[in-house]
Image 1: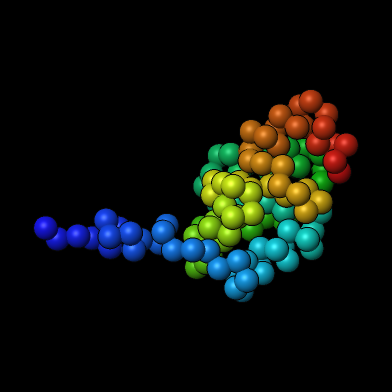
Image 2: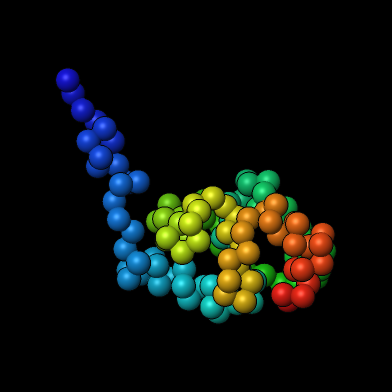
Length: 117
């Protein structure tokens, strides 16, 4: 029986994430350098939802579009280590992850997001 790289456990998802490497440092620096940071993909409707909330609040944010980067998958692995989820968007306010698009919308609708800003 022929085994693929994935059935032998050699796929990228089984490799440990290097949390001291340059990609992890990029993510950590990005999170701390701006008040609002959104790790996003340009085609993602949940990412657009999160951005729309900050646009309504007239708050500037840094958006890092993972689908336009060669290291996007590695960044998602780092975000998984930091936040417990690989999904986008991963939204950070004041260095803390507040979740994804529906989380941001919910925080906005109940008034908590503005208090964080």
